[in-house]
Length: 265
Image 1: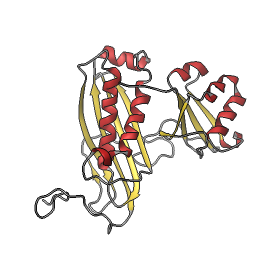
Image 2: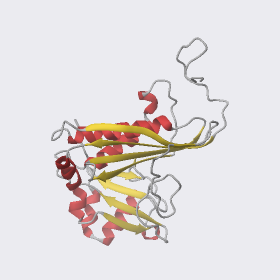
Image 3: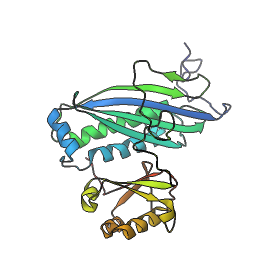
Image 4: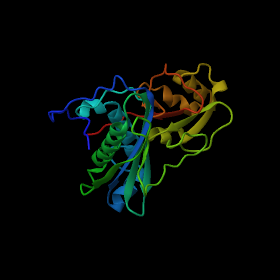
């Protein structure tokens, strides 16, 4: 078996991918964090002292995937086109299952990025919950599948395929039904959910004065004055789980999340 990160002298080196053909590459990884049932109950009810645990872990996982080359020696810096981090609360096993998907069009795979996203998301869950439960256990971090590249596709056996709903792409986890008119799906997280009295909303693109976050905020405020809280400069925003500002453009079927600042430590 040939190890690509070792040269003929057995020394570590970064693989030269300059001559490889650019192809669509995708990887899905998973893992889980097991905790006490009482901790899981606090997590799902939003009663933990550090705020919205899952929202914080999702952002951490996405940011980690983008910076994998800074964390893992010899990894290439990649221009990822998509990173998603999803959670499934498993009450029966008292755990949170974490799944990450990474995708790009490039010359090297994204397996390490997906695995890093899962690892850091799990670590963030631990950090957010450790005040009430230090016996949590992170386990079963693994690559579930990969697509693209010279070595072909890979699918781990005895693993559940991520659920795809609506018009999603194979391997991509999405939530809810696909709306016919061009629209964006809006989510309100943590305390914002309480302030506006809703967790989700759907806004048609034709209702936007400008097809960016600023236009989306204006459309929501016109719908109901409660949404004026979104104009608070402290309110954060993410488009498809990637941090964005008011000038960021929105397109059909985007998921836009608004949430307050969060802290760890």
